[in-house]
Figure (tube, rainbow, N blue to C red):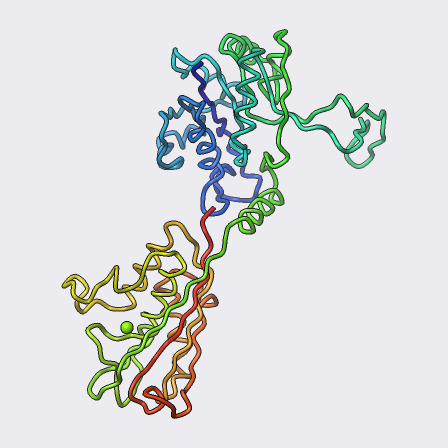
Length: 386
Ligand code: MG
């Protein structure tokens, strides 16, 4: 059976205090809309998608949603939810036999909920996921500031309806027709009920929340952050110190009697930080990506290489923080640490507060202690992008 998913994202709701519609707000680096679309685009039972957007965003639909593996059509929504779903219904391919209607504001819908809804709609004609009411439910009378309980409703029979809601095409056609003739409803199932069809309930998922308030958004973002895995990497670098070379650290030139020798600008802070970031992302090391035998990197600034490495790692990871220790006998680099921090943070693309650079001497011991070399150690923490 050919299954099409309609993603209802036509609401211009800015009630989350944002300047963009709420479905375009990001959670863990991806918009709510893109997450909802991806949940269906990656589901093995879905053939194609229709995404309903506010009219002024339809032309940008493909950009907003990102790359998909199934065909996606974008249609403009109407003034009400009924009109929006009706517009999507009109845009359905002739071959669509079963249609799921999903609120874009539920980006955490699971593949299991989608599969259960499809199976029940296929078997019974119409199905929705629902979760049991756990709290005691009261019906009230009066206004917001003076409500009184009129009745305690028997909880056993109650479920909270979620989406996707699944319908055989003929049933959704009747529901849409009812909506078109002015019947108001907050979901498609209630129109199907009014049209006389039995809507079956399958087990929903408490994680399939609808993001409506600022609090919902904050909670969803926190959940994403906690859920993503942290990864650490270490980096180390050492260069010989020689006369007649500048001393470059973190992209900042430090006034010094001697500088670090190397094919490159020999910036040990950037080299160690680059290796720490690449290491945390399991992407190899600086020599693999920027070999000094390759003319492309001859004379390249190490700060630029650090920026490139951060971008590479950033495709799948968020860089949380970087900590660097420079080991050098002299000069004292304390006065330059803040500038180095800002410079490194700028290259990585994170706030300066997430970069730490410290200095140590080697107490006169070994080559570093004798002032023949400079070394740096670095640690980076990355988090996988959800
Ligand atoms: Mg080096």
